Length: 300
Ligand SMILES: Nc1ncnc2c1ncn2[C@@H]1O[C@H](COP(=O)(O)OP(=O)(O)OP(=O)(O)O)[C@@H](O)[C@H]1O
Image 1: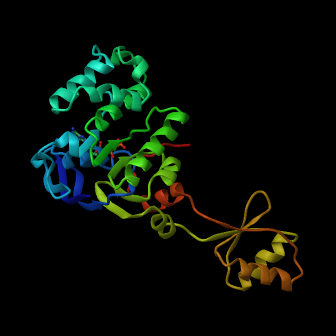
Image 2: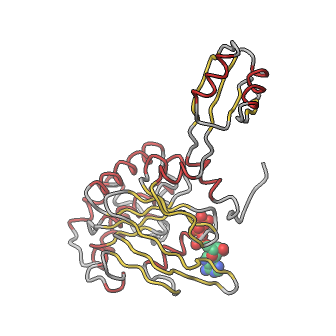
Image 3: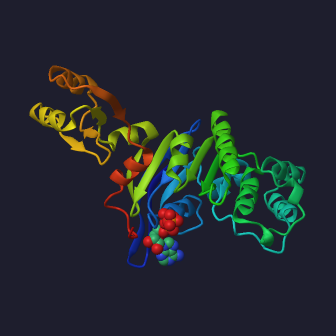
């Protein structure tokens, strides 16, 4: 279990992380979400003591700097590109293993696990982003740690790689280990993460089960296709239900009470061709929850 309390980091006048406290439970995958510049990477560095700031993080009761065997306790991947470009994958991992006091026999096993054994003797400088990510993951897995902390591990992975990573992290968590993983890939997070820590402008927005986060940040909606949508919208309005026409002729009603919609339609002799509860996606919920916290917005 990871317990973070009061994490705070200022860069001059910018408060990148603002009194952040949360818990990451073992046995589930916890996603770490936030818009660009929200403070995710800074938070992870603070948790590991790689940045100076306020607050304390404990991994199963100890600060990272107090761990007797850090690599065997917490597997970390923050910046997969932070590898000497002239070193081969095998040489890089051998160096990591030696530095962490791990047997060299683990190197090839880790390379095999991430699918890089065939390119073990190629220089990391020539690796694609996805290959670098895999090498970073191999380094994180080297110590067979009880906790994994990964900053955007799915970056650059091909679809097969994304699925492989999902299966790996889920299996890791199912063994009772702790997995804390940041990502901007919300569709992937929706299937990967059982729990979420969401931040915006350095502050905590939510720390809860993914289902609860989506439910709390969604509006109930029912999609109706009817023989007379204009009349149905009018009657629904009289019944206190707001119905908005969509461009394809359907109505989107602010409710999840399909019975109420069906009953009003039936009494008016309106034929329904579709009546579907629409569930919000994690993406919708994320935008709703962080609406005021996004620092950078492009124009469509
Ligand atoms: N070394 C630094 N010096 C000054 N400001 C910094 C530094 N590192 C981060 N920041 C600022 O701190 C804030 C948080 O940045 P951080 O990289 O932690 O966000 P993030 O959530 O990881 O972003 P992204 O999703 O874009 O990777 C930003 O406003 C950023 O500009």
